[in-house]
Image 1 (cartoon, protein in one colour):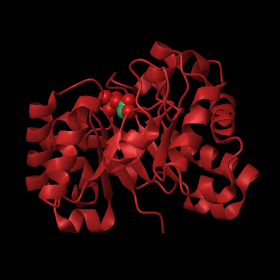
Image 2: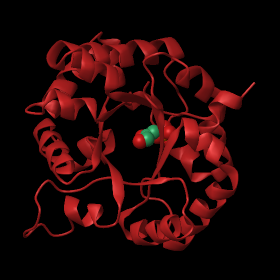
Image 3: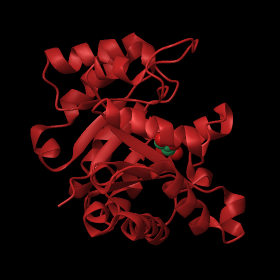
Image 4: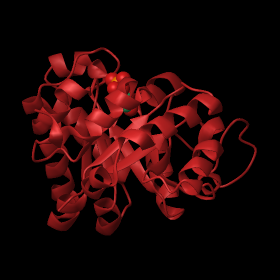
Length: 257
Ligand code: 13P
């Protein structure tokens, strides 16, 4: 049974004081019963990581620490970048790679996503590999081909066992921060397509254990419908993760009426 993973991607929001406040508010609302059935990760900006790690560790909060990005090299002359081992040292468990904002705004290529995915795994952390199509690609009927090729490129050279340990996030670009969500049927169909792609290359076991998140305007009102689909194993949440109440209601999707 795949345990769902619900991840809050805080993007470039919240300084370390604000981050501390949010993680504390989350801890009042998300209970042990919730995390028995759902894994929860938070992905603050780099400058907040140490603060959030300290709160999680000292208060023994049931949240996994995540990061939004890293470089694929271990050290060197890469001004402004962060190495995977620096994140691992902060008890980071999950690292997002290939987010559409990094692909579009910062020129992250499929090849870089693949190198990052390998580097994150090599440091003992779990990549959350993001894939997604633009509205143009969707309208042209190219969504499945785009997602298939992004998945294949990101996972090139990994073993079936490594692929089975991953998280893949299907995030249609037209649904990110727009308030437009893929319908539950569409999201399910695309996540199923991702799983079928994994199965075709890496076999049944990898396909059954890889966790596939949906991301793109996930809110308390649509979480249950999305998260109860058979091939959707969690959510990568942007805007709604900045509000402790909204995020905890998403984590508690199974309790919604
Ligand atoms: P929104 O939930 O704000 O649409 O963001 C989704 C996302 O990009 C998460 O990584």
